[in-house]
Image 1 (cartoon, rainbow, N blue to C red):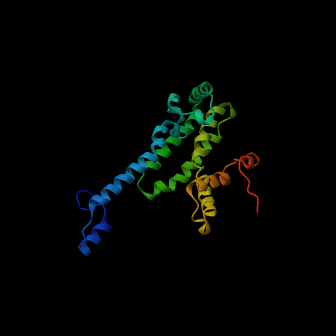
Image 2 (cartoon, rainbow, N blue to C red):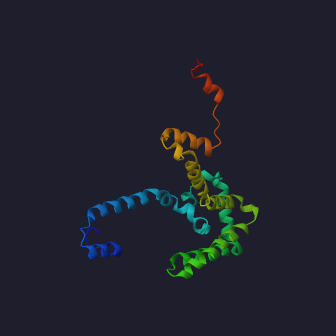
Image 3 (cartoon, rainbow, N blue to C red):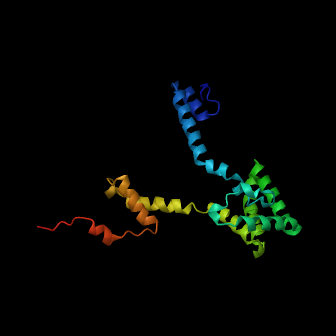
Length: 207
């Protein structure tokens, strides 16, 4: 983009060639940089928790000291002992070796066959973890905790739906502060103490 050749922006290049328009490449360069920085900031947690996220497909080679177990309420000692025991059981550990291989192939494939493998890999992930007996309770608890992270986007969708209901066309002048308060009431279990609040307000009697 900065060079002005637009080699990777075919539509923009075609528009420039057909109309002889002057393209402000500096403007687009800044926009792309801001987008890149925005994505990097948004997905920084994925890099920080790389070992934790990788645990679901590669528990046998995971360093427990690099896993963030705090959000899941996992007992670190029990987790380490259960992982050590799991590694010694060839039948059970073999499932995760196969899972790791299938997952790697699906991720590195550039063809549509790789995309077709994803549902099968997902089934393998749940199948491998569901097959473990309850003696690996802490290991399973961590795996299920990590897996449910990716199912939590529904709360974002719910918040946006509530936002559209609260801030409708007839309430377009609603301030951000009041909107935030309304969304908290709508999307959380927060219950204000209305009696206490009303006592702190000065009542105005009608004339």
